[in-house]
Image 1 (tube, rainbow, N blue to C red):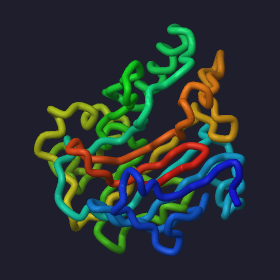
Image 2: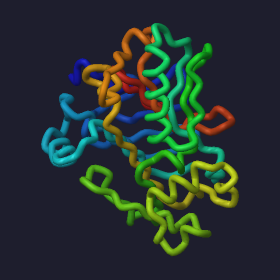
Image 3: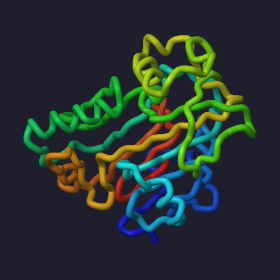
Length: 257
């Protein structure tokens, strides 16, 4: 119903992921839906500007006056306490990329990605391409709340508050930009953990990749991604360094795993 976009479970990558009420079929766009994996349980919201949304008014209110064209929010609890330094976010592919653009454009694109995801490990010329960075250093907004006090993830603005992590964050005065700088460095993450009692909220948004045209907009040039990805969808994920997944999504087909 969201053609040409599709949201579904990537069961091949994470067979333990469950999405109640949707199973292996289409998941909503524009409204939150529940999911559960081996390590995380909560809700997810995906918004894509210009898509056929299940909440058109909500999408219009969220994107109005903003450059961003994509938003995803994950909220919930970890099922085991995990060090912040061990939780990654990013993209990965099972096959090599093809028809890569001119080296100048490729370098510009990777620099853009590096700005969005500080400290990102970007591997393009490999059999299993990937872009991975620490979750705590990549989410535009991150917060932790006692159960029942968490924000509505469908609202227009989610406020930063990482005081639950303690340490330098204890007073709740650390800005999102400073938190990203601190938690993009594994050494600076030591001593911080995502516990099992707190409801954590992670918001991601960007204005570079357009799922409608399947292209990456660098401002002075657009890179068409269909021929580059070798028949693979764009993936967005949360996973542990040991390989266990929290969630994943894929482009044209956004799979959560």
